[in-house]
Every structure is written in structure tokens, then in C-alpha cells.
Image: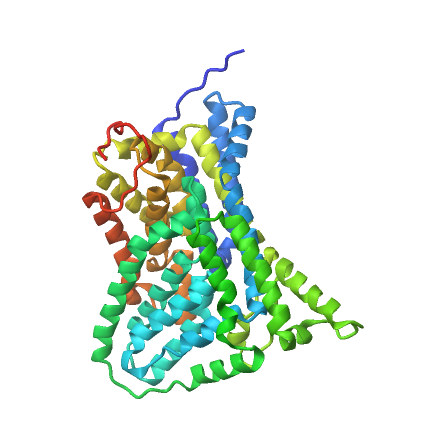
Length: 489
């Protein structure tokens, strides 16, 4: 029997989205930075249920909705597997002293004569090594804010430098969850996505560093780097710090440069990290191994195994340092996986019911070129950050909305994935009520609207993305694609 379905009206398409905005806003209001650890997922699933009821009203059957959900979630399965493997890599790289070594050498860069620029570079290195802008800001960022206070330097500029570096490292790191999510939604590959992002990220970082250098020339105050020196000393006491600790990092970068698939590359990186832990960090392993083990090697293997599964917890005299060198493991990524599945479920129901197509049709009427398509995507992602207060939503919803439009325009999926990262993730920390902006305010103590003018990287990346699109600079086209329908390439 043929089932006739109707297209949703604009009101019907908006109802689930408006319900989601209300629920996510309430979630952020009630739970703050913890809203992404369960409440947002519940909001997404309830919004998906509302969209499903509207789809039923328009003649859709549960079988088609369920098939759409399954298909939608399958789009993200590759990213989910990579994210789980990233958790294992973080666990062994912490245990092996790879991440602590990068932090240690990063702190060597700090100089009173170029404090703002050095702060940006240090946070970029740390975030690149751990894949988290939040953890970087809450640890190294807090320490740098303390140093800036002691030196009587500008706290908004310091916060802008910290956030600029942290988000650069986060976006260029294969360990970042959002860096994995964007290419999954767009339908492209992780390392290809990261390589393509360098065309906007590296110039934006270089310009940011120059601007921070200029601001730093007029800065006064006495240098007091004692707190950071103490952190370095404690890292050296806990771990065997040596350039050889960076070999697993070189292995991972080499595999990425050779264009090897992300999942096996990250698995290899995690296993090499476990081997390095066994070879070079015996003291750390001994402190974590069960004392009643008759044979040390058995306990050592157990510690590495646990690091792959559940991460590590390493005690340090400085609580901030303990937070920085602990974590990882597949288990640490389960909340992110839950959030991705919930978001993809909502997006899939909206797409299957025709609601997404209805919402985007009006926008695409204004699109006449690649530049206007990318600009529309940037502002849609920014609007999603404003309305939903969640960076994951600012990636998933616009990604689902514009994926077909980019294909029709003859554009490589990497153009979409880079645009999603350049606006959905990057602008989230600029909005005070977004979970990212609220979190940065809670740890750095500087209001987002105060540091926003100095978060140069966050401002430059969306601008460069739009400029590149209008000038057709480094805009990848699909091979053998025909002339786009309604959009000139």
C-alpha cells in the first residue's frame, strides 16, 4: 500500500527546533557547564520525539523514521570509533609522558618580553597535545591568568591569547571530539579535514601572534613566572622528560602526512604510547600498579591496559597539574558518543520528515555563489551557537542542512567540514550563554564580551573562510562534477 506523505509547513518545521532551543537554554540555565553531560542529550531526544509526532501527522510511518535514524547515526559511526580510539591514545600518551613532555617544553617558550604571544603559543601546543580547549584553559590558562595578574597585565588580552591558542590546538588536533565530528557530518575523512583546515587556521594563528606581539610591546610590569616554574619542576619529578618522548607524536604525524586512515593510525599511536610507557616511565607505572603483584611486568601491562580503557589518574602536589596530566581512556569518551548519537537522531528525524529541507529552502534562495553559500553556512552556525548554546548543535544541524547543497554546488565535502569548524566550533566561546563561553568565564574569570575583541583567532578564522570562498582560493571541487544547480562555483 502506497503511503502519501505531506511536506511540513514552516510552522511545523520550526516547532521541534524552537522546542529544542527552549530546552537547551533551560539546560544551560539549570546545569551550566554540566549541561552537555546528560541534560542536553535528553533535550535532543525529546525534540526528536516532537519532530516524529509532526512527521506522523504528515503521513510518515515509524518504519521510515526509524530507517532515517539508523541511516543518520551510521554517518557518525566512523567518527564515534575514532573518538573512542582517541580516548585510548590520550590515556597512554599521558601515562608515557608524551603530553607532559609537550607541556614542559611549551612552558619553556614563556618570556616576559612577549607574554601575550607566548601564552597563545603555549596554549596552542598544549591543546594540540591533548585535543581539548577546555582542559587547556582550565589548567595552563588559569596559571597564565595568575601570572598576568602578578605582572599587572591586561586580563582580557591574556584571556584572548589563551583562548586563541587553545582553540587553534583543539581544531588542529586529531584528538579533539569536534574535529572528529565535523568531517563525519560533512562526509569526509579526518586527516584530510585537518590538512585542509591549515589554510585558514595557520594564517589566522600567525596574524594573531603578530597582534599579540604588538600589544605586548606596550605592556609593563615585572615578570613573576614562579608558578609555571613550579609546574615544570613537578612535571620533571613525576615523568622522564626527554625529546625521545615525542617519537610517538612523530609516528602519528607521519601516518597523517602519508594519508593513512585515521582509525588505524590513532590505534597505532595509542599502542606505541603504551610501549613508550613501559620503556621509559617505570616510576609512574610503579606508582599506579598494584603493590601485591608478584611480577612487576604483569602489573605494568595491567596499568597500560587500564590506561587504554579508563585512562589514568596521576597525583601531583598542584591540583591543576593533576587535572592536566590525568584522564583519557575509551570510557572518558562515552558521554561525547552519547551526545553525538542524540544529536544525529534529532537531525535524522528532521531530515526524514522534510523539516530541514523546508527550513533551508528559504536560505538557499538567496545563495548565488560559493561565497554566499559558505557565508550562509557561517552565519547559520553562529546563529545555532546563539540559539542552542551548544557547539555540537552548531556543527550537526547546519551540517545536515547544507550537506546536499554543497554537493549540488560541486564542492568537496572538506569545504563544508572546514566551514562547520570555522564557525560552529570557533565562535562558541564568544557567546556568554553558550556552554563554551560560560565555561571560559568560569575558569578564567574574564567575561566573554571583554575578551572577545582580543580572541583574534576566533574572529579571523570565520573571516578568512568567507574571503577564501568569495575569491575561490583553496576551494576544493568534486572531481568530474557538473555545473552546480543554482550555484556558480
